Image 1: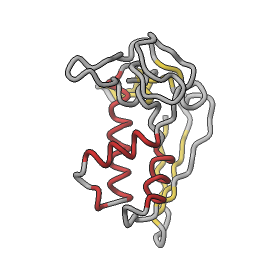
Image 2: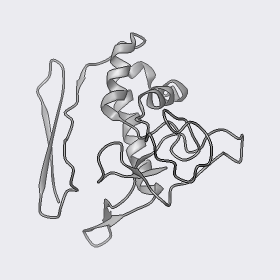
Image 3: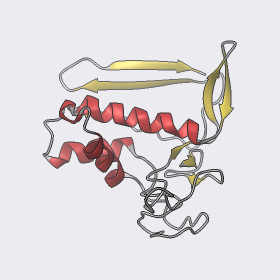
Length: 173
């Protein structure tokens, strides 16, 4: 599923986001949601455009899996425990009823936003505090912004693994 990330976290459920229940097993669907509206996307011709769709939300979830497996190498390839951490740390979209397709609309899960919006910081903090994994400590800086990144702006992201020098990534938009 997808949310509009320009609204305050955890975002607003997108009208085009899929709804459940799952036709395969009747379980809640979607499982979680991620930013998927007006996502800056590379397009042919060395250009960028703002695209929307659940196909824009998928890379956010995939990146979170990569971050989890970087923090906890013991979880690499262990899909079900990894997904469990993501679900446990998801931020509910409390009060957003979407299509009111059934489920718990206070804490989740439900058939509109599942367990909620994925939250990278909360997931890594949960993983580190669980004691179930000998984690490689990772420092995550939270970007606090209520507005989208505009063309011409530069964003810097700095990360470091404890005991190593910080690495800064810079993107020019």
